[in-house]
Length: 110
Image (cartoon, rainbow, N blue to C red; front, side):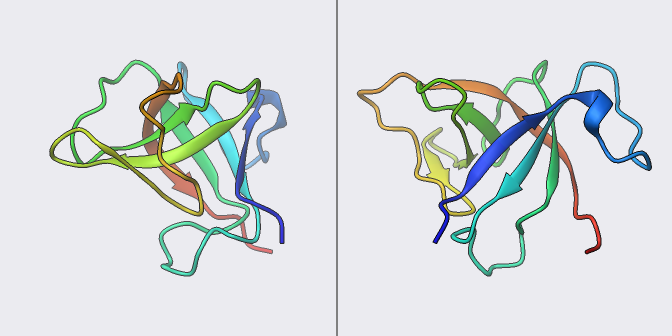
């Protein structure tokens, strides 16, 4: 099984039917361990706004501290992180940086 992964997509590499918005980052979700809750699926393209402050209830993409490794989490009411789509939450002893707040999701048809 392939673990969940997020790969940043350059705006020039987005599918032609998606118009990039200025200031947003784009990531593609892949892997076999995403889960079956219906919220996320392999192949989703996620738009992320790095200018927004993360609030309780927001879904964020965060950098794990390992080069080019991103993860997906939701922030709960006490500002703790819960991993989503097969990703673990940040560990308090390791560096983590929020890249941005999820602003949109697109699931291309196969």
